[in-house]
Structure formats: C-alpha cells, structure tokens
Image 1 (tube, rainbow, N blue to C red):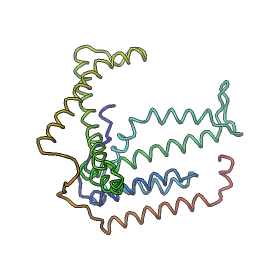
Image 2: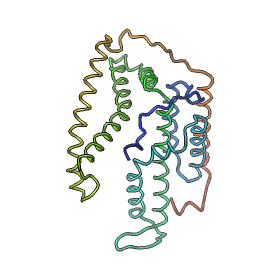
Image 3: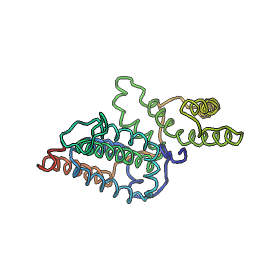
Image 4: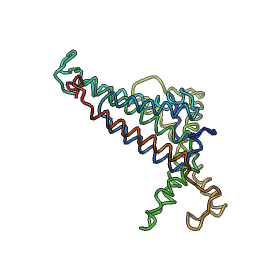
Length: 275
C-alpha cells in the first residue's frame, strides 16, 4: 500500500502539459475542482472525464499511475459510498435490511460522490506529476504575491508547502524500510484486531519521527550553509512567462466549464426522481 502513494512525486517529461507555466497549471487545477463541484447530473461528468483523460494522454502519464494515486483513498471512497447508499432517503426503495433502506436516490448519490472524489484526486495528482517542486514553489509565491502588501510571509509559506509536498515520497519510502526491518525482526503487523495493529505501529512511528527530525535538521543546516535568508532580495535562475500554450489551456478549461453549466441547465425529466 505504501508503494502506491504517489502524492508529491514528479515525473520528468517534455510533453505539452510539462511545458506549461506552473502558475497556469495551478489556476487550471482550481478551475477543474470548481467544475467538479458545479456538475449536478451524470452527463456533466462525461466532458470532465474526457478532459482529464485527454490531459493524461497528452502528458504521457501511464494509466496505472491514476490507479496508484486513487488506491490509498479507496477505503474513504467505499466508506462514503456505503453511507450514501443506506442513509439517503428516497421513494424508490430497492431493498430493506432491517432499519437500513437502499434507494435509487442513494445509489445515484453514492455514484456521483465516488466519481467526484476519483476525478478530484486524479486531477490534482496530474499537477504534481508534471510540475517540479521548485516550479511549484515559484508558482505559489507569485500567485500569492499581492499578499505581500499586507506583510504576509508568502515566500516562507510557499517554501513550507513545497518542502512538505516533496518530503511525502521520502517519508513513505522511509516508512516502508522501517516496516521491512521490523518484519525481519519478527514483528507481526498484519494479524490481530484493531487494537493489536495500532500497538504494532508504535515501533514504526518512533523511528519514523526521529528520521523526520534528522532530515529536517539536515535540510535546515544545508539551507543555512547556502546562506538562505528567506525570500527578500532573492532572484530566480528560471523566470516564469505565460505563453500561447497556457492561454489555450485556459480557454479549453473555460469551454469545459461552460459545457458543464449548459448540461446542468438542460431539462432531464427522467433524472428528476433521482434528484
């Protein structure tokens, strides 16, 4: 399971998506999240799925990476789906199991929420797959630049977010090594009840916490040795510039939003009993 966590990983490439300005990719990701929450009927998800599938194809990210990014949150998706199945009231009852009732309204709501979560994770993962941590830091800092007028520590916030995102794969790899070492010493982490498994995590959390502290100290020492003193007066080797490619991506996303809104306005009588 730990090897399936791909949050924060960057896959170098030279595709159109990789070459886009990181600021625009952040803006488009926010736009896509808004689009997913604007969708109010199943037909609105069709252009959203096609748009995301096309973006992954252009970025040349393999399909298995989508599955790996979704697999860690699969228990959350299943839990929310079960809640929606049995706790959404409706008139069209499929079957009854004691006090629980499954309705077509619950099935529709569970499908909509599960698909929305999957697209949300896959869409945000595409940004981290195609954007290096340094570029992401510069993009966040420049987009939040107006907050400097009120003396908000924009650079420090962007740096912290980038470091946290970058260290997720590192900590996952470290956790996997610690678990393998504990299993080699005879530790049993897969059998027993919930309390037993929780107790078995203690020998993992303590060395992981110490390792994280050591890495943080090493990083702070390395930054200090390189005379890092924050964002004031710093320059960048690579300057960010918008291109026609970025505005083309923005135009396509705006068109997608318009299509979803139009699909929401089209009357669909056969769906009224599910709403």
